[in-house]
Image (cartoon, rainbow, N blue to C red; front, side):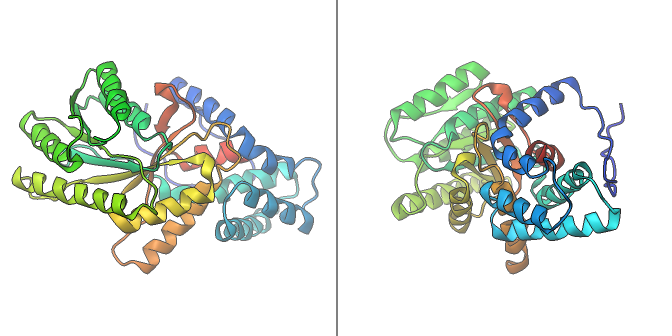
Length: 338
């Protein structure tokens, strides 16, 4: 099977989609099921619809209800109208197919693979608010990396919550990876030791778990900044020549809608995010928030020279290991629109 990614194409009103590999097809089915609650409002707009202003008004309302945010909703609708005119679309199904294209284009800047191997080890710092599924996502990410042939070392830098250390230790046992942990103490010290251990043991990846906190807890946000600085010092002493962490990921709960966007902005201001993991998309009616994050990322890239949209590396639609997968803009758009 060819491995080259097909070039982008101008989609006709009813594009023929390639058949996915069986494992990916299973994931697509879970994604469609997970986004069913979000997409039902959008899909309902096209039932017995006429291609007129009322359709667009109802669609705008459905997009806003899905938490796409006003900038993304307005952009998608204008793009959709242009596509309908260019393709002379006359049926609800044709318009819905074009809507998939419009949503996919908005989401495309979020599509980027997590790169491992440029640095040894690749140090990944993971942050998030309480309850977002951060530690569980680290466990799933560890499994994903192990499946790709990477050796992983976990750092339990959430030193103040015993349950977090125990939970991470369980994931380490499940995935047969090593873990650096200590009860109490300074989380920066754990992160420092883990980076040095990862370097000494020749690990491909060091994953640093941190304590969950709200962006309004300024003293805890300052602690995150300290952990990041200390990781950089450990990596410099190890002689890599490139400051770590090489990736700063934020885990966000897809159920929180626009609050997730606020978290992304706050943690980005504090840490300079390089990627996102979006969890709990199953059963949420707010999956459109990824469109809002994409539009914010475009604005961020325009107003901050040298920056780019923060990509979504992984999305999750359940509790099982296989329910965390790489983000694909078109797949997500198809699942969202139906």
